[in-house]
Length: 208
Image (cartoon, rainbow, N blue to C red; front, top):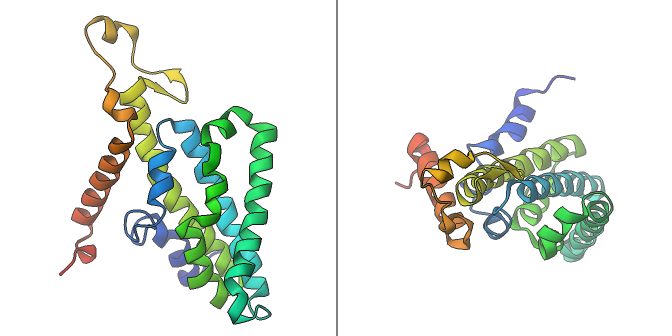
């Protein structure tokens, strides 16, 4: 099934033009916390994308029956249920990664991207469009996580996904891993650099 122009915009805009992390400045905390290694960043990206997409669909299906005064509670219940499922799946099939992510999987419940999309999109749109919005925003979030984690693990540990990338001969020649890369401030610095590059290439995002 082909996508209409509107649906393409919904799906692809969050990847760059309206990226939730570097444009909307949402989800920064987890982007900083889980990017020391590439593997947990990938898992977190997939987890958030799945939760946002399916939470959007569920809230969209229920949108006409949810009383306005308790909508936030309903959203939290739906998100909490999905996050619990994701957490149990990770423990069953990727226990080591689950341990690395620690409490941050549970904190998906309070992720600003997720609650923002439920409020701003799912409550006012149909399930298919809401699903695309969830996939787009989750993927946009995941792209930033993966880019930051790639740089941090490569230059901070000399590995990617646990595999040695920088040859031993380079270390023998005097190269030393950059310890700053595995420290939390570097994640913030890298995010800032990505924001700077992105806004330099997208003049319409620059403040007047």
